[in-house]
Length: 174
Length: 205
Image (cartoon, rainbow over all chains, first blue to last red; front, top):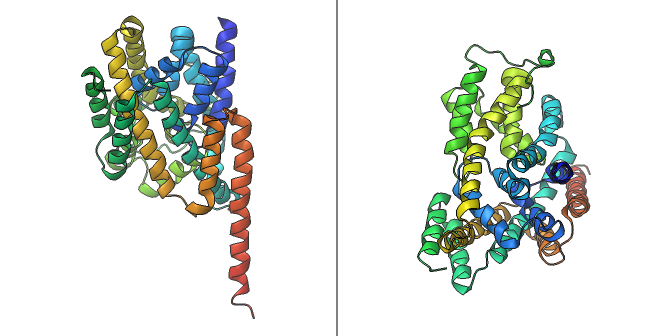
């Protein structure tokens, strides 16, 4: 158990440090790590945990807490949450007072421009992997497309889409 | 929770008149954590900038810029900055814990329910529907981010590249991220320098 928690901590702490683009951009790597490499859960469970996290309030890193819970219960959830937030928190605590000096540095602008396309690719990869993991048939794929288009053109609250998805699922439509 | 003290003498930052105490801050953040569906940031901004006036708009934007720039969860990064400004180490811990603990507990409750009833067909059907909707939200977010991108047609191939590397080739992200970021940031750096040089060339002769 201790070794499992240690492995969880180390792997997620590494992800915290490279999570340019935020937690959403990390979903493909989390999937690769916990489903394909460590085999801590199957792909459908991963999609379920994502769905649960989407339907509940709170910062979006809580999907990582759920993954930790599936791996090692409440201790796993706590370890995963700490690992995915602690390293950068400590860094930022030390660094934020010096930020003004770097804000206008050319390398900072270059990194910001460089991160953007990678974040775009990773967020789309997240959508792809969740859709592929959820076990959707053609009706499920149609729901993905409809939600994508509506969300892109309309500023409705995300909770409406989640509620509609749950209702469609319960009604046996997807 | 970790011990909040130790050496809090390091940075008790702004101890302005209206700075709320640690407990008040914790409760305010817990409320935000529990009401933030699909995004905590707007609520956090409202509480800090408009409601309690702990930061002004430009200050908030500067901190948010840092937190979006650095890796990790934007919300947690911001919580650390804001908390540290208000109350040093203790503030950083209290704001972060405030945002996390209550929704974390709620999430563990949902996890327990999933453990009990997750095998039921109706639960699986609902979660499948939510996952489909959630995948749509992710795609829409990605498309909106692509739309807002600087020099889109030059950088978009890198988005496709990392997508294929993750989804098809299933390469590990840490080395992939660092390698591709070196290329894209290097490209941006080079183009910025060239633009500067060209801008310098025009008025000279």
